Image (cartoon, rainbow, N blue to C red; front, side, top):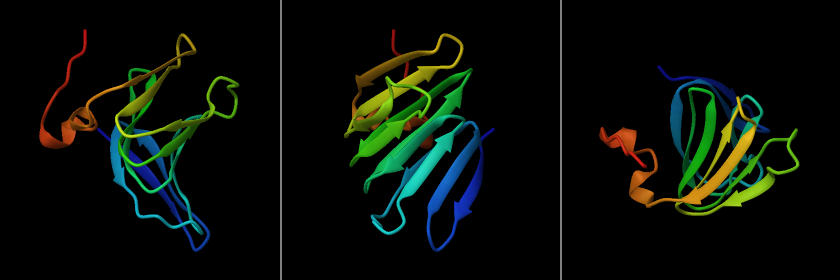
Length: 120
């Protein structure tokens, strides 16, 4: 049930996640940074592979490798958080709470390999 909207031009590379989840493996292009967004959450790739998802009102970004800068302009808490390999950040839209943590990189976008990962 995933859907995206592309925003590619000579000046930019972008994807808006409309529903579900998506995984991106991004080539470095300093002239055209790659940005993925869902609602107010935006993730800018700094030469990396990462996923972005929305599930039951929870927005998240997880990094497989490389670096990602995650931000929500309306939030002073999450304004330019840099995530490295195995790090993730989540925002619960209903409670307006942030969480940040670290996982094994094999768990990032495990759905691509037909796996479900449960925690707690």
